[in-house]
Length: 353
Image (tube, rainbow, N blue to C red; front, side, top):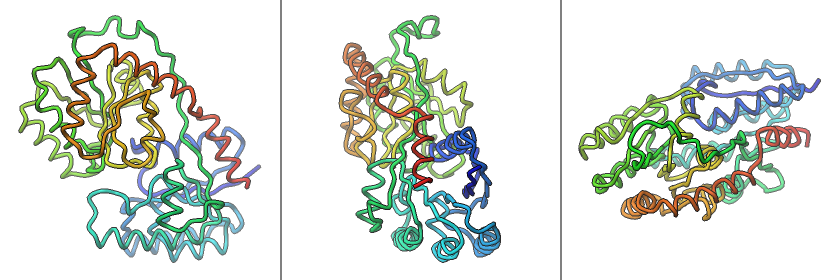
């Protein structure tokens, strides 16, 4: 039986794309017969306190030597000195969803600290698994990680059969275009731009549902609610918070357009999920999004360009035939993406190499 240690920060059950990726890979590897020891390092990363660093050192350096250890990049990038010790005892595999210094809302000093820390930590990894080709390119260019050290394992999707009759029985105005946005309420997701872009469109028939964790960035959540109130969109925009998987499936099924104005994504799992439900996409060109969403599936705009975002939303609301063409393109794009079973197999192959 193949053994693996999987180290992660925070709450593995948190409703984010990164943790969803971790969960699906772990569950899939276990299904292939891997024996996985899960080590949770707690909250505070990527800026752990000295006691948290001491705890991580004590726990990770006391494990049985020789067993391969995957460390989620959110933790590994903050542990450069510990990475050196781990690498002496274990094959060390870094799992990078997106570089830490690329997060939005950081100070210049925090960016510099994380860039240096993550560069040092990645140096000790015998293998780096990136969730997209764009992330691999960033790691190579900005962090000097050799490309032959990186394996790209794209997230999978659950194949979804899109039925033309899916909207039968939906309540509400049949002419109303239902916009859906899924993502944690943090600055990088660009919700402040989305609400501003919707403000001039109140004469059009639309509603917006936002599903995502509201607890990760208090000021971003407060700002979102303030923007909704400032632009008098209380009756048009619904902030649902984190929702169950079943509720999320229902939201995807009921929606007409998926819109998320992220400033940067290491991959963008929600875009892939939305395409698997046959939804036309409105997004940006930030990070790996163009690799995930082809032109045939959606409209991609410069990050932060609010007028262009507003125009794209207006276009899809007013042109149902265009929405239908993009929906077909989304389904085709979804068929080209790996399933979760394929993603797990590629992850296992990367570990074996």
